[in-house]
Image (tube, rainbow, N blue to C red):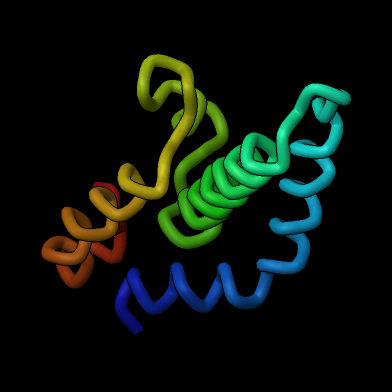
Length: 100
């Protein structure tokens, strides 16, 4: 199974939990001035962030410490994860460590 397939399967398996955590965190900062559009943007951003973090740890085997250092401490994004997957795919068969 390719890393892309593994990433997709793990999100499929854990999506309800990821979505609930993202919803809880997005809802925590809602005020009477928060618009629906702002709330939804925050929710989608958090789903993407938590999904990327989940795949980074569960599929790519990155440590929490490593994830925290990516992008000058702002964490890992979906695009970062895809870059790791794309770059690791060529080396995956060599040593079973997709991130070397």
